[in-house]
Image (tube, rainbow, N blue to C red; front, side, top):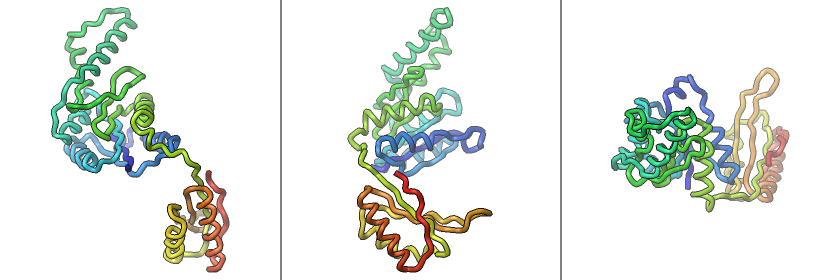
Length: 265
């Protein structure tokens, strides 16, 4: 199953805030032997969010969506998810209980008594309005849950909340997909050669050493580094080592200049 990430918020696209979710999600996945297959950034545009979610829900991918599940006018993700699914928003019973507990806790900490029927606190309950049939993602930080519909998982934009919630989903819903087998990567820097010259070699290596993957990363160089192509292989350690040895042998045979890079485990 492919894994995708959607990051929502005008503040990200405008540059007012720097996205921290992408690198952290890569880290959370890598810790479990998983990888991210795609990512999209969206502004606070309900039509675009709804269309995107309709497309990604239809794909069957595992998707994490960060942001836009608050209760202010620029938070549209809950309604957009419902629109994409063709279902109404509904107040989740346990979500309501969690929010009311949070309200009581906050009042107690402030030395007052909570009025659960006040307009302000009634508005807070909208944070538990999710697409009909959704399940909760627990939020240990403040009890305000995220939600899951199918293979789509919606968490807040705040990293302190979002990251533990994503980890919880991975560990409780997808542990059967974890792949903790060893993985290695080896590469060389190739000089004075076009990628088109290397392509037949790359194709042959992937065919002969499947499922090892071959990659190339061109660089124009700078004042201290010559232009080059990082050419490498990655996958199961033993097979990767064999593919790397063959790659170096073929580069030598082709009289192409190259130097090894430090292998990444």
